[in-house]
Amino acid sequence: MTRSTDVLIVGAGPVGLCLALALDQQAIRVRVIDKQPSFSGESKAVTLQPRTLEIFQMLGVADRLLQAGVANPVMNMYAGTQRATVLRYDRLESEFPFYLHLHQGRTERELVQALSDRGVVVERDTRLEDFRQDDSGVTARLARAGGVTEEVQVPFLVGCDGGHSQVRAVLGLPFTGARYDDNWIMTDVRIPNMSLARDERHGFILDRFPFVVLNLGDDYYRLISARPPDSPLKGQAPTLDEFRAIMTPLGLGHWKLEDPLWLTQYQPSQRLVSQYRVGRVFVAGDAAHVNTPIAAQGLNTGVLDAINLAWKLALAVRGKARACLLDSYHGERHPAAVSMFAENDRLTLLVFGANPVLRYLARKQLRLLNLPALNLKNVLKTSQLGVHYRRGPVTQAAVDPRGARAAQAAFKRGQAEPGDRVPHFRLEAEHPTSIHAVLRPDRHTLLVLGGERPDPDRMRALARHAQQRHGDQLHIHFVLGGQAASGFDPANLGKAWADVRHHAHRALGAKRAGGVLIRPDAHIAARFALDAPESLDAYFQALLC
Image (cartoon, rainbow, N blue to C red; front, side):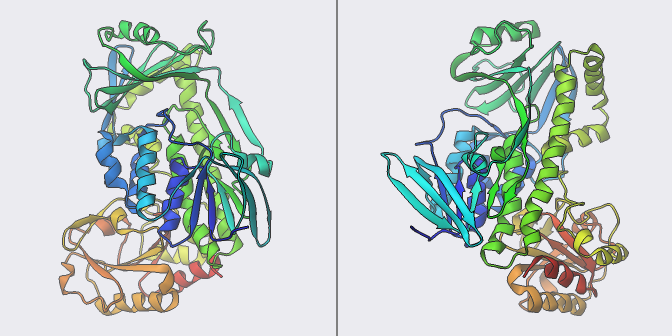
């Protein structure tokens, strides 16, 4: 029996690889196994959303994915052949105001290479057979090709092993939901004479099903459609002729469809696990939830699972996490999945519903999205930039309600609240830098805001208190509004940034000087006035041993 690993990750898809990267950045020893002998030839998920790209920026892999993928800043939505509206991702407040299209296999290759650069090698052709757990750890039995078996003991195990998860099966967790009657068909195919805008997404709402075109680069496009429940082709593999029959009435029949990478069909379902954590074992990604592809949520939701779990698990490995912190993984991510499922159900009814009234409303809604405020609200939902944990168990409102109320004197209510994703803004030192490039997933980040007229002594006093009490948990940054940071002495307590245009202060809802504590998953943990460090103490005392 071997025990040289802190966390055993079962499954080397994007979710397991993201978790491994985040844990490795925190010096947690990880082992990643996958039962497949090599990368899948199927492209599967191809859309990386803005929130996912922010996380990958924190993990140091965004640039390599951006170089490999195709950015799409807008989506043209058509009612039949008439363009009804344009969904404007390019108006999102993010360093990445677009959707990135990239074959899942290429995403996995880039993440595997990033892990390899850090000395972590994915073990392929290695299957989890069984495991048992007790108060001291998890004992897992692994099987390699050729019948070689191995027994390993680890403190924690995470199942990122997909919709047919062995980890979930061994735990005996219910995986409840329903399968839809809709029969989706897809192909990744070369179209050398594409006549629509190549760097944009295109979605057609037809009589009973959609038709979607996504640019994958190198003249390849993903075509997505669906068959009605009464289709005689239901369950059969699609052909290029079937796609041509859909495209021709749209005036797209002249496209050349060549060299398909795959042609596939499936019936989507939405299923959700009952518990994300059982003792020392966790599930994430498709092992915890599978959903319809209607809004490209699956892979991206799994990445949010991984980054939410990673920092909590790292603290647990070090013996510093209270039980409530590990429990909060389910307490935050399960409701997020429920909310995502509800939105998918709503969209499915509008797009596929047999009810003619619903189909009429779907087309009406498309035209309403020409209103900028409604357009932004719609893209915020699918970009996952709006995912929050305001009612979660490890935010300031839950662990320090008195401090949360007191913070209203220094911060606006309803803006950048504890539990919210950190809003996008840039800080200035040698050059402007996105906040998500400043944040790191290995510790909390404390932003000490100076307000309109920074008081260096008071700012340093808060930072000194934080460093003395919680230094091993924090990165400290000073943010000085309205002035260059070059004249400020941080006294070796942290890095100083300028907020010349007060963009950071406004984005964080700061009415005056104060502190903003940011979790390692880039969600706000707590806010407090500059002279109220007890709120910082209360947060850590509630969650850490």
